[in-house]
Each structure stands twice: as structure tokens, then as C-alpha cells.
Length: 364
Image (cartoon, rainbow, N blue to C red):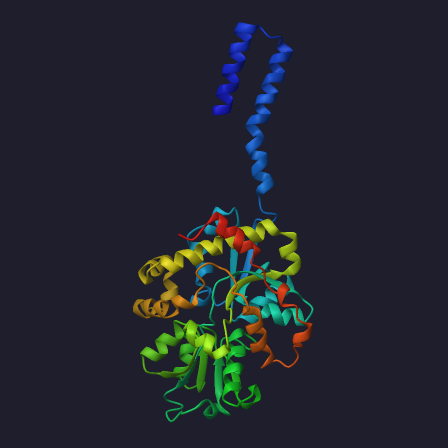
């Protein structure tokens, strides 16, 4: 409107005072129109390569992926010019399969999958962090194992995981190894990551469970289970794994990241904003934003669960130095098919998009 007003005023001035020819006036109008359109061309040039994005996630309601929900609910994806569709699966392995199969573009999943996929020669790149500790907690049923004393007592038992092959099973394998057990010493059963997991333990279908909150808080507060290994606390997790074991993140095929840098930057910007929002939000703030279904019918449990997991969530989306090595070490203890000498850890993640996001949205 301003450009048009200036244009009309200019034409009036030159027509009345200088008496330019008709050809001159037309030329002046054309120049004015092009100038007025310049911001539009600039905007198009800065747009993401792909604006309709599908993100696959295994257990969207978990605190593990809370930044994803916050970015969606507070409109951060839309602010970046993206139309994001989030598809929820039962477990991280299935969300990964969705991207490999082409039905999704990006995974909101566990970091270690980028390493295992490189070993399978299907390179994936993680580009923004959601969690700096696994947040997975192993509990045993007080009903099925009232005399539990040590991890070796789990031999021959049924252990619930979110889904076979998921991050929960990987961490469970690592915990069992600390107790001198191998994956073959137990039976893993997929029970999901919400009410199904709670029901499975309470009904006696499983003897133990490794899962995330609010499931763990529900079972421990009710007295149905007791904790035997906990990675929700950063210091405990670091002492357990020997350093920072990165958890939830956004990752995608390396080819997608290379071909769509503006799209990846937009996704990163949204998650970084969500990470920062969560780091300062109260439990009540979070409860007001997430869908009612996340509370699983017990608001107090949800609030307590958030406070218990808050420190495990990344404050800025950045991958800590050395975290990929820690993740590789954890994987090789439970997966002998991975040859560390053939893994290039510099290619499983990048901080360049986070660094740019922090320039646009600096921590306050």
C-alpha cells in the first residue's frame, strides 16, 4: 500500500509538473510495480524446499518427545512456514520403518538409530536434540517379583518394552548386561508406552517393565512396581553409561537433509524454540498445552512425571560433544553386528542447524 501510494503520488507529480510523455509514465509505473513485488520474490527465495512434512514418532504423548508436541501445539512449525503432519506409531522401530518405507519424511526418535542405520548402509542424520538422557526406567512387579534383590533375578522373566527392536529394548539389554544377563536370558514383550503398558504389568502378563513416564510414575505411585534402574536423572544416566547418552531427536535420511536444508532448518528452529520454552515452563504450563489425553486421567501424576523428567530434556537442542561415541558404545554391548571401525560418528549428527537456530532464537 505504501509503495502504491508513493507510485501514484510520483506519477501525479511528474504528469502535472514535468508533463512526461505517456511512454515515460508507463515505464515509471512498471518500475514501481516491480519494486512493490520485490519482497514477495525474496520471501519465495527463502521458503523451505518442502513445506508439507510428515514426522513419524513412536509414542507421541511421552515426555521423551514433549518438544515435538509443544512445537506443534504452540504453532512453532507454522511460524516457520511448515505444514507438519505427525503420525504416531507403537515404538521407535516402527516410526523408523515409516521413513525407510517412504511414508514419512522425518523421524522423531531415539538417537542411536542413526548409528544402527549407518551400519546397514542406510545413512541417517540427526539434526536437533530433544532429550539428553534416555528417561527409560526399569521396574519390577511387586506382585510377580516380591523378593527381587538384583538384576540377575530377571533371568527367565518376561520384560515389557514399548516395541521389539525399540530404544527401550536396547537400553534394557544394556541394563541386563550389567547384571550378567544376555537378551536370550529373558523374553521381551511389546506393550506400548501408555495405558497398555500399565495394564500389562498390573495384570501379571509381564514380570518387569522398561518404559517412560507417565507410565513409570503411575506404577510406582500406586505401589504396583519398584524401580531397579533409572535413567531419568542426568547424573545417574551419565554414571550408568559413562557419559551423555542422547535420547529423543529429529533425524532423517542423509539425502533428505542434504537436499532440503531450508526445510531442516525450519524444523530445527521450531524444536529449539520448544526446548527453550519447556526449560522455563512450569508443570502447569505444560499441562495446559498438551492434549487432555496425555494426562491419562490423572493430572497430578502427569505433573509429577514432568518434574521428574524435566532435566533430561535438552535446553537448547544441541548435541553434546562425545555423545555419539557413548551411544555407539552402548549399542555395541548389545549388538555384535555393528563394527565400530566402520562407523563414521561425524556423519550421524550435525549441530549446524541448531547453531543457526540459536542465532535466530538466542537463549534468554
